[in-house]
Image 1 (cartoon, rainbow over the protein chains, first blue to last red):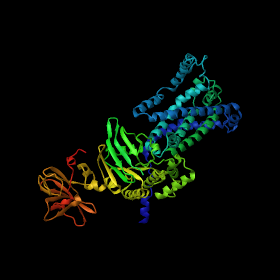
Image 2: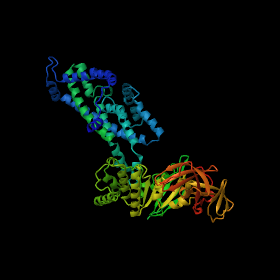
Image 3: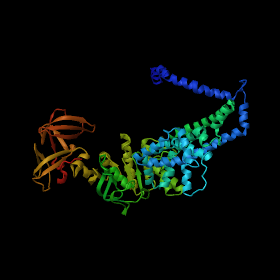
Image 4: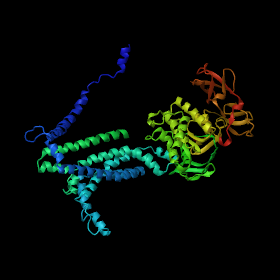
Length: 287
Length: 353
């Protein structure tokens, strides 16, 4: 009797759901053949001799010893950090302001924010040239106002890339933050008032800490995305500001150094994955 | 000690009037309940006292001082929400210490007072836990501790028991009562539950449609209600309608209902209230004859729905339900004429609440 009762409680042996296997098979195959295999291949290239195919650590050694690679990786990381900070500084107040609007206005503002997804990134990037160029909207306005006599150089330097990338990435921070802010129970803030707290204290001790996990998670997300940016730096940097993605383009298309491109890819992926694990951890904590 | 006074206070949200022209006074040190159905404006009343919302017009005083437009943070009012509203990212200690830190108390004082508050709600040892690690009843008590730790002038409770299951509710109910008694703090509770209101309160403010229906002790509201709405909202009511032909009987369409009155309302149309527990049911004699249509067994009592021969029905509660009368059997109903309460003239008319 006892044994049978225990058997009833224990989970039943899992049966194979063949219908599900069948439904998932195409996607699994597609990812396996066109994503995982090339990725492993890339990893393999990074440690094998292009001529003989023998395993070697020479490429990683070259990468570590060459100042050019490390400088570009470093520059990319700094750039990504700058983009992340600027996105957070602009995005947090924007999300906060949006979450405080009347519901109908919130929908309008959110539509404006999401709208950036509807326009191709290429079009948007070229639009910045029109706006930020020497004869562009911003410079003409600045000159008309007499704030500057010579046009300010926004383009073909890091400033241009920073502006362009922040514009592209802003929604990735604003939307999750907005969602987190709307979810905060209004009564927490009201009760804090009745306990005697002023608006500044309520913001920093109640509101901000409650949005912090989401802020951190989306900031890391933005950081990861900005590490691999190609089009925006290529167009707005005018090829003068080399970042990782552009360097890989050069390595593959100009110098045919596939093995070095593979090394850079592996390094970039290692950085991304470790950041991603932090992102996941933060997301679970925030939920 | 602090009493709360409303002087013709109104609050409208857009074109919707939440409360209209309310004047009342809540006495110091007492336990007052604002009772009403949902949408009666009771939560608005609480928000107005707490300072979370401002009235559209009128004047609110606290301990003799006008606070109509004083922000919530400077009112010194302890509030417990139905949802507890504990800060999820803070420990229990930090939650309770919050109002003390806001007041810049020195750290040793904070520790001492948080410890005292936790002892008062019997949660000593829970300092380092997070709210989500506590049960509903425990969270409720933390919210209570946080609301009283800074010695507020008034304690406001918003449906404090609604989220608890029945058994826990009775436990917390007596705890709240004991706490309020021992601290002597002026307490205002909002609820839609008449049983909760009756068992806890010194005074009940009955609201309906944003207006005060009646203010009084639980006993007054139950036994001497001013309106049909009040009579029906606090417990079950049998209404005896008719003309007061003699000082001791209401002449209805189907016969006389004995009552006793000294008021000079002879010849007038009246409405008498008779509570179900004041009615007796006998087999052979009484005032009204009827047939038992339905029997509801409630443990301590049995409730009978009795249809009279003149096609009206009475609700009758009889204690000691061990031997019940059978459905379909004929009974005579009678009562002590003293038990019939005549509603004041203006309250006797049927209302649309």
